[in-house]
Amino acid sequence: VNKIGLNEFLVSPAEVARRRGPHDRIVMSSRVRLARNVQYGVFPGWAKKPERLRVLEMIRPAVEGLPELKSAFSQTMDNLSALEKKLLVERHLISREHEAKNVGSGVVLNRDETFCVMINEEDHLRMQALRPGLQLRQAWQAIDHLDSALEEKLNYAFSNDLGYLTACPTNLGTGIRVSAMLHLPGLVLAEQINPIIQSVNKLGLAVRGLYGEGTEALGNVFQVSNQMTLGESESTIVERLEKVLAQIIEHEENARASILEKKAKMVYNHIGRAYGILANAHSISSKETMNLLSLLRLGVDLALFPDVDRSLADELFILTQPAHLQRQHSEKLSAEERDLLRADMLRERLKQVSRPNIKSGGAGDAGLDKAGKS
Amino acid sequence: MVCCICKEKPATVHLTHIEGDKMQKVDLCEECAKNKGVSSTPDFSLADLLLGLGASHEIEQASGGVELKCPRCGFTQADFKKSGRLGCPGCYETFADGLEGLLKSMHKGTRHTGKVPEGLRQTRDASERLKTLQQKLAKAIEEENFEQAAILRDEIKQTTSRVAGPVST
Image (cartoon, rainbow over all chains, first blue to last red; front, side):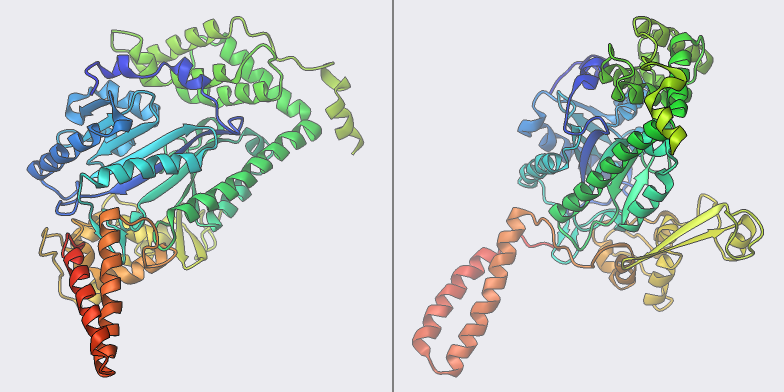
């Protein structure tokens, strides 16, 4: 176990943003989470403090002893500051529910942030594997392996009929939640996102916002995940999600091509304005920043910023969030102060970025000609 | 979106009910929602919301009006109604009757077909093998094939020692 503080332990946003994976133009990350409970314990939401502590003390060393979690960061939630917990939420490493936990809960995070285990969240164990880009199968294999190693040390609550027993019946059976974080600005701009969400819902999959359950889709980022966990195997669930994601990726690419062809002015207008505000604002909220960075990211994808790598947008996505901004300053910042500092950072980082390069510009643009004729 | 009951006021309460592979969406205005017993107050059951309003009711009915209480952890159906979550792994046995319909409505099936912990898988395989052996033994005795019966009896003895390990709930 690593003894250094969370702030020093976390991988730098620049490094996180540089990680590459298949289809990462659209799929920002993949995640597989398993819910597990120990046999003779009471679920965390119903257990009293001594019982939660007993379970934490039984599970934590078992998790720390796994080869995947060698020299991991391991801490109890009561020993983490509010800021540290927020940093973990902004990195999508722990849930908002876990952020609210204190005595009797814990978190174990490996060195390169590809495994994160929450102890005593809604279930005794919520373990997740994270990968950049579209790598659901790899994430499932990784967490399956970790789970198998852990089951040698812990007696899981398992029934032959119902599978892994979980606090909420919605997770019963496999306890698996397979999800991908998607950047879908094309579908949003083409106003095709709602029918897509509806048809994905019809397949029994959930579409959520950036921070999971009940959050809005800031920055055109959507999470797609399975809802049903009982009655089919983990690999069936993974495969279905893979198929649906392949279709969403195709729709997003088509939407981007079609808006460029039919509504190029509208796209350039959005991206140009986003650039203008990000590079020149003196005060900007985190919500506005995310929505504009999404357009900057789209601009990079469309080769409008030839000297910029997509990782700049992704790095700024992380760096401009409230806890990550606060982290760089010793004194406690108010929301207004954060907005000023966020704008300062964005102006500084976008100083060397030239304006969007729109070929032959204005009405002479090929996309607009086509739109005019059709 | 307009409320699908009064067809006048804007719908602010949206419910999704999934049964098998069919999904139904209901959009209600504040007032009609209240009349239908749906509220958005914090103590409103998550289970009810998720499961199309019948979850805890079903548990109540299955128990024949008697308040069920988990002997292992003291969790009651009223607690489930409040939180939508159970108290301990044992609750799945305590509330089994009421949960069945609920699981059917929210999942693909009601039987687990995924991963099984290795230790339990061995035990489960052994107990299934035991069942087959016992059937064969009965048949051998019936046919007065005592030589075969003796072999089977030894095999059963061996398998039994393997099944005697830790057993799941």
